[in-house]
Amino acid sequence: MLALFYIFIAVALGVSFWQITRIMNLREVIATDKDNDTQGKIALGFLVFLYAMMIYCLIAMNVVMLPESASIEGEHDDNLFNITFWLIGIVQFGMQFLIFYFSYKYRGNKDNKALFYADSHKLELLWTSIPAITIVILIGYGLWAWNNVMYVGDDENPIVIEVYSQQFRWDARYAGADNELGLGNVNYIKGINTMGVDMSDPKAQDDKQVTELHLPKGKKVLFKFRSQDVLHSAYMPHFRAQMNCVPGMVTQFAYTPKYTTEEMRQQSEVIEKVKGINKIRQAKGEEPYVFDYLLLCNKICGASHYNMQMKIVVEEEAEYKNWLAEQKTLAEVIK
Ligand SMILES: [Cu+2]
Image 1 (cartoon, rainbow, N blue to C red):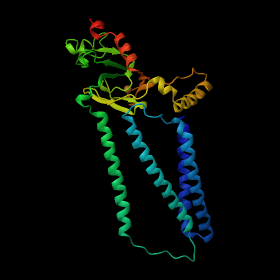
Image 2: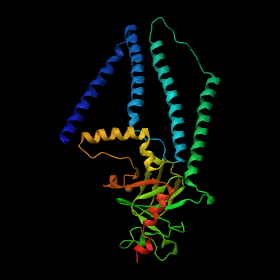
Image 3: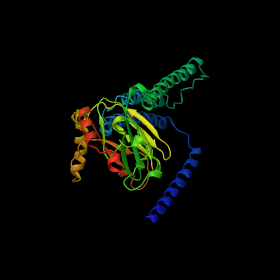
Image 4: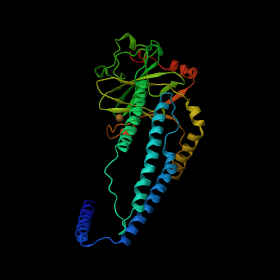
């Protein structure tokens, strides 16, 4: 393999040396009108090719995009994404046209003379202030959306869940009847107390440790993140939520699930995507896939990083309450 690599470098060096000698000889050659005409037409052809690629990617790559946001707060992320996407899309569509069409229109011709044009203050003002205002509006909206998931008002009374990361697994802890998490610290990790909960803390007694996240639809959930070892990143793509899990500190975000897992499975967009995935899986001889919300690790945290995932089930409040009631409290588990 290494030998192949050396051969490749030798060939690449040879080709670049050959190209450099060709460029040096170009000094003797002056482009004719016929050359300019050909290059101009190639530029126009390239414009058509670029547009075709763009349209193809927009249609063909759409299947790998995420479905609609499954959280209320995530709608703002989608808005920001869509506004930015269309703004940049339209501007680049126009710019490509200007660059390549003018390259063609004003291709070299012996009879043409260049126009001397110094500058226009009006134009300068326009193309400086319009992007500046646009960016201020977008960033303002972005900051508002950030605060919206980061800070929870006292009156909102969210469900508090701790998400604990370690190489290479997730654990979760529900705050229990008092909706307050007991203290946690790596020093308390012992035996089945894998999240290092301080069992002398009265608030810890009713906490519930689980390996699957269940969330009620329409209720605000506040996640608190901790990490045992290295940086991990709690990523819940369907809810448009992601936060670093940092050893030695607690990070957080909050969102409100909008659709139950079952409702999400019924969405035509999701059905289409699942169909696409199962086509690939079938070709590989793998079991068919059923849609589920997931918590993934989005930091390359070590060799088995890709194994870090946890199922998230969103259900109606009654079902959620039943499930939570079945889970044992830490006081019952850790004696
Ligand atoms: Cu990780």
